[in-house]
Length: 279
Ligand SMILES: C[S@@+](CC[C@H](N)C(=O)[O-])C[C@H]1O[C@@H](n2cnc3c(N)ncnc32)[C@H](O)[C@@H]1O
Image (cartoon, rainbow, N blue to C red; front, side, top):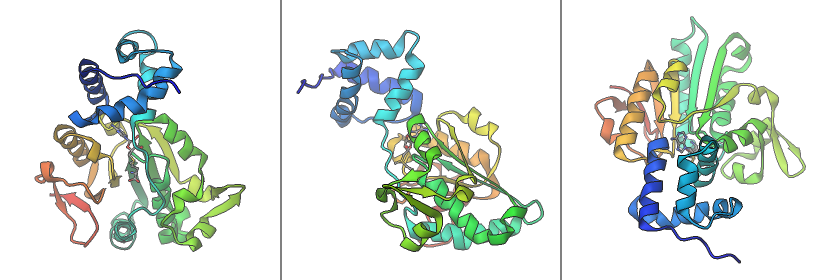
């Protein structure tokens, strides 16, 4: 087995600075080993024997954009599942969605953004919830659900819409049989739900690209802000505030807080919702 290339103090600080500048992901002082081990394979593939060489490869030369993509594919945590945090999703389906649908009944337009959606389980879950809420009325509505992520690799999996049992670890089997078809070792998502969701690469650091997508009725951004520092979190929340409709709702992860932007948002009055409206 080849020995893992070690990262020096200088290389660690240069690499985490580059990562932070590009993505807002903050690797703390004690996370050198994490970065070292997640990138070890990549250095082997590139036949590089130091992180210094890798830093040069990232900073100069024609391949830097592709290599950043390759690097984010490896350093990001992509864990997700269908119906993740069900009590929160119940609030979305039973409290928030009916209100928004009522408020939009004249235009029949509904826009939902799942930011940092990883392999697609989150936006597809929301699509299933919209599908069962609207029922036969769905065809009268213009529903847009967008899933975005910094990593193209996870988005490719999302587009495929084929999942293993691991993605269904907290799902009622009735939901699985209603919306999926077994094919070998995979569950293939029903095309009706598949077609309700679009995917696009987007870095949460890019507020300009976010503004091009317009205003959303609901934004889900769960389990990514934990990897950002206060500064980046604040930037992202300011961007969400700009992109959310005045009566829209923002859902965040159960271990996240809006402390740094508490002047922009106020909590929704619903237990376990981790949901916010504009202050
Ligand atoms: C743990 S997953 C969360 C997936 C889903 N939201 C959920 O809660 O189940 C975090 C995702 O954030 C993405 N990510 C990390 N930094 C990002 C950034 N700056 N912009 C957009 N996505 C980012 C990662 O690629 C990863 O897929």
